[in-house]
Amino acid sequence: MKIAVLAGDGIGPEIVAEAVKVLNALDLDFEMESAPVGGAAYALTGHPLPEATLKLAMEADAVLFGAVGDWKYDTLDRPLRPEQAILGLRKHMGLFANFRPAICYKELTHASSLKPELVAGLDILIIRELTGDIYFGQPRGRRVATDGHFPGAEEAFDTMRYSRPEIERIAHVAFQAAQKRSKRVTSVDKANVLETFQFWKDIVTEVGKEYPDVQLDHMYVDNAAMQLVKEPKRFDVVVTGNMFGDILSDEASMLTGSIGMLPSASLNSKGQGLYEPSHGSAPDIAGKNVANPLATILSAAMMLRFSLNQEAAAQRIEAAVQAVLAQGLRTPDIWSEGTTRVGTAEMGDAVVAALA
Ligand code: NAD
Ligand code: IPM
Ligand code: MN
Image 1 (tube, helix red, strand yellow):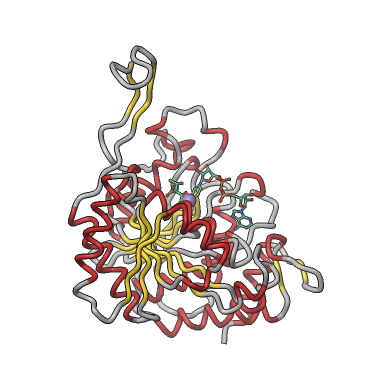
Image 2 (image 1 turned 90 degrees about the horizontal axis):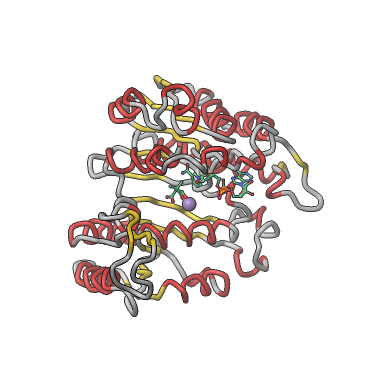
């Protein structure tokens, strides 16, 4: 089993080091190979996703990814921004299905942004389409407007775009995931305004007919954003487009206590996967040993489950995470009165020690 380890920028190297520590403690036969990505790769090679890094990722059984991006690259030409590395990996590997589970561990109900009774037992699965939408639609660019409200003015434009097969395949993923859970799917759209999302809604409805055992409902994204904080437990599987899924998953993370608790898996149709926390490179806390490594450690568990056929090992990691929370250990983002504050490395060590 070969794992490509791409740590990236900011807190990336710190949190990935903890996940690697946990993987190494499992006594499984892994081969891990690291490569530079993001701003770190830009500094070394002049490109955020060097050929060799892409090749390593494409040939590995799974990719463990940290995060990319740094404020110091905000002035770079857009195609070379560090973020292009993760977008490039998603595109080249065809990673269209992004699973972002928002689970509120019982020890963290008081760390949630919501009242404990609203999040106790919370277990939502956000399924975000990851290779379409306004993220990848062409054309995009800058020009001088020839029409619109200000003809003659400088303008920028993106293209929001979804094809039938793109919507069908993510809908199948969502319904099949729901069949293994509580058999409910909420499809989130903006069909009241956007043609792309009326198309989305129509196709998800069609695909839903093939899954009569799953209850499908539709919700506009603005209402979904509100319902997520009003009554989050009404949701089970949420399926949505690339942009809405990006935003709603960050929102959902705060129901679980912190974005530092939200893992993710990005899968393609060949069974390859890239595993990364849902958060970014957090330059504001980088290098301080305060970042929460649990989202990355839980992403490694998803990697064992989905790409490496090691369900038992995945469960060992998840149980160890639960155990350290039960011991009262908390990085600052999830700390509350009466618990013990630990750093990034101490949290990783504690997970290793708790592995049964
Ligand atoms: P961010 O997710 O990096 O940080 C948002 C806030 O959450 C910050 O206050 C940060 O300190 C906190 N935070 C994030 N992860 C944490 C953790 N593990 N433990 C404790 N606190 C944590 O989002 P941002 O600040 O908007 O973006 C920073 C950079 O990361 C940008 O360049 C952005 O483009 C990039 N980014 C990359 C990815 C990725 O690589 N997949 C994802 C999101 C953002
Ligand atoms: C994420 C990030 C990325 C996204 C950025 C860094 C391109 O926010 O993985 O959630 O928008 O998909
Ligand atoms: Mn995001």
